[in-house]
Length: 375
Image (cartoon, rainbow, N blue to C red):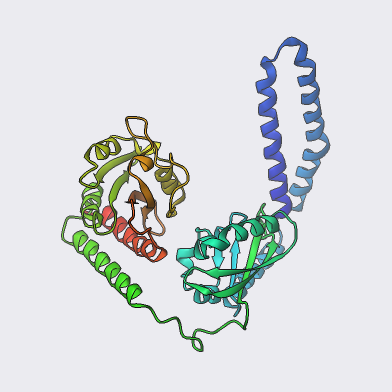
């Protein structure tokens, strides 16, 4: 399988080079001999390497080994999930591909929520850059690495992260296997080590989130379903003010995205009009949410054009003084993205937290179900 993937990469590179040669036909006549030499070299490459490689792969053919390989893969997946050590499989950008049961318990993050999100998002801010750098180095084949990090939920507890390269069967890219352990003791079991006692502030925030979830659910149940625009407008009305300063709702139709609601602070009426007439396809964050189906949670967004520009040409994030935002795709699992909710917080308001992002992730599924339900 790995040889087939390598052959596919080699063939894709060849196709790209042929396209460049076709584009080079318009060069001046004096330079055409160079282009011709390159074309002859590519033909030699096909005849001398790609074609024999293809014949070798074709002659191998399917066999009973494939069934054995599938059984081995199922066994390895079961071992990965059941091994009593917190283990995560990430790519070179630290995006989580798999999180075993022990890692989910150790980090306090369920596997379904972690998958598709960067593992660095669950670490303390000071550790994220170093972890990303070490993961990229391991993925490049520069050897195993180990470093001490801190989980965002327990910043006082040092965690030893060991990173090693892994080439999953049938995949062209190297992944990174991350093993997490307390730096000063063995891996605790959930039964032996109680979790931290929440503070009054944390308890209050949790209660406020539960009230918000209840309010959104009530708004969905009290109105008609199956009307995407109406569902989004009711939810936006609940979220505006008590949860976010700005709420922008977009529906993903069959042909294109359409903006259905823009709720802004009372002193930003004109800015809200500029956002309302904006084409959602010109918002990179919205487009990426529809394409990838993952929530974005940037704090102090670095790219001022991440949400596009208004009719005056000013970046919307700058004009709205956005300090934190949540861009949430509305989708059932499995199922297509029904729409996107983008929430802004501006000025001195506290940034969105991971707990708030998790609550919004839960509400997004409820919204998607209400949007696609039969009338």
